[in-house]
Length: 353
Image 1 (cartoon, rainbow, N blue to C red):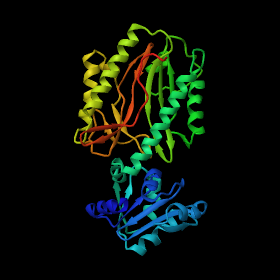
Image 2 (cartoon, one colour):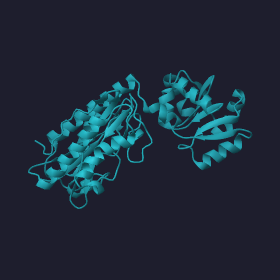
Image 3 (spheres, rainbow, N blue to C red):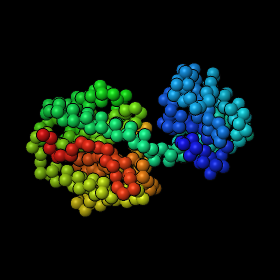
C-alpha cells in the first residue's frame, strides 16, 4: 500500500523513478533499519542499494525489495540500475541529499534529469495507519510509565542531570531502544529555555521544573511535557501554569480533521495572548510524531498543513519568563474526524504530590 501510494506520486510528477535517501523514509517504505542505503522505486521495481554490512539484514527486514550490492560507491552502481529500468527522469529527496552528493551522482549518470522533491514521502508518513497508531500508543504508554517513575523518585537536592537519567534508565530498562530526543529537565530559570539541556543545577523546593520526554519503542517515538513544582509554589507560577493549561485545553478541544495548522495553533495562542503573555510564547503549538519525533504536520503560525484523520500531533503551548521560570504542557494526540484520541495519560498538576 505504501509503495502504491508513492508510485501514484511518481505518475503525478511525471517521474520514471524516485531515489529515497532519508533513513526514516527508507524504513517506512521498506522496513529496513540499517544506517546506510538508498531505495530506487519505479512503477515496476523496488530496489534497495546498500553495502556489505547490511546484505543479510536486507533479506531479513526488506524481503519485498531487490538487493543491489554497493561494492565500491553508489555513483558506480547507480548508472547500471537506471539503464536497466530505462530511467531518464529521476526524483530525489532534496532535503536529504547534499549538494556534493548530488553533483557526484549527477556526473555519473549522464543524460538523466534529476528532479528535486520535497516531503514526498513525508506527506505519506503524516497519515498513520492503525498499526502505526498502536505503536504510538505503546510508546506513549511507556513514556507515561517513565514519568510516573520520575514523580516517585525526584526530590529537592537532585540535579537536573540525575533526574533525566532516572527517566532514560527506566525507559531503556522497559524496552525502549533509546530516548526520542535529548531529554529536558529544566529547573527554575532554566525552564525559560524551551530546549534546555539537563545540567548540574540542583532542583530546589518550591522551584518549577519543566520535564520534556519521549522514548523510541519498536521504532516509534513519543513526546510529552509536564511542568510541576516540588513544594510550595509562588502565586505567579500558579497563575502562569493555569493559563498554559487553559491554552492547551482550548487547542485539544479544537483539533479535528479539516482544521488548518494555523487554526490549531491559534486556538492555544489566543488564550495566551489574551492573558498578556503572547510575547513569551515563541514557538509553534505542535508537530507530528512517528518514526521521527518531529515530522508533518505542523501547528504554527506559518503552517501550510491541514489536519487529516490519522495524523499524530503534539499540543504543547508554553510561556517562558527569562530569569524566572517556564511552563509547558504537552500531550500527543491522534487526529480523528470528530476530535482527537489523546495518547498521553499522565496527570497534569502544578504541584507534585
